[in-house]
Length: 336
Ligand code: 13P
Ligand code: SF4
Image (cartoon, rainbow, N blue to C red; front, top):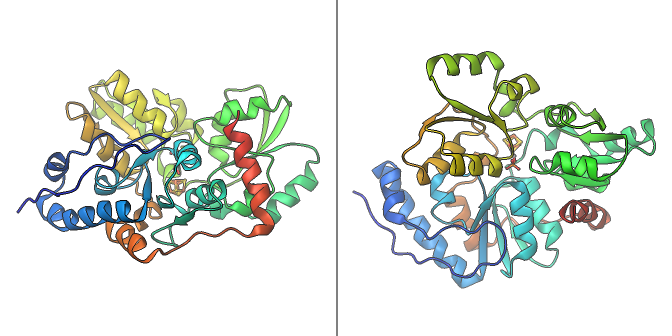
């Protein structure tokens, strides 16, 4: 049986990319009826808890549709979520995303309670490097600035000069006005940026376990099987993949491309839930959907979000010995 959820929208949230008014009937039609019957109660409870506790939910574009369209107050790419975290007047921030995103929100809101519904929501890029690795690199390349992708731990950010996201990496690298930078920890992002700038980039060997799986041969076969297809790639994909695609950009840039250009047949080379979330608002476009799932993002579910709001667990804390330096690296990025 399909059930509509008797919940109201939360008005007047400040900052970030606000969710458009909810359409629960459409969400109910979009999801399998059995799933909606399960989700509707959690969605109603979560939206009520947010009002009671003056909490907001920030959700990354890779969250599943019932979170993304059902309970999130602000959605976006890593950059939008970081900016939204600066602007919110809520007392509690629930991060429906992975640990580094929750840490970024906490660093920018040291006096607010930041919750992550599941502590195991990590990231292969963040796990690829430690603060000690960065200190070693600095001793090998004295004076070369360190640009660190936000997909990194607070400890690594604390050793860095400035952060970047996939949306602003080239701009950040060039903003430093130097001939050479070290870019951590995503090797493919670094190589993709290096192709577009004269700044020499020294890369680390971290990879995103989701995007590294895409191959150029796969793209060729999609083009052969689906004439006229427009292919968009996240810059965490290998460079030979990005080079045979029609567009590359952050998750928000990909959404913007689809929303404004409306390619009739489109493939998003990124995490599975992106196509689900974008197609919700673009029912006339055909999405070809290879599915590479991020196991870390998928640790977050509605039940976990509800539990976080009920119990106020799991609270994100940052070691005071590193928080000021990590925050400074993020704040430098936000003013470029
Ligand atoms: P975006 O900043 O483009 O949303 O990317 C974050 C991420 O984790 C991609 O894998
Ligand atoms: Fe990390 Fe890749 Fe998952 Fe993004 S998709 S959170 S980069 S493992």
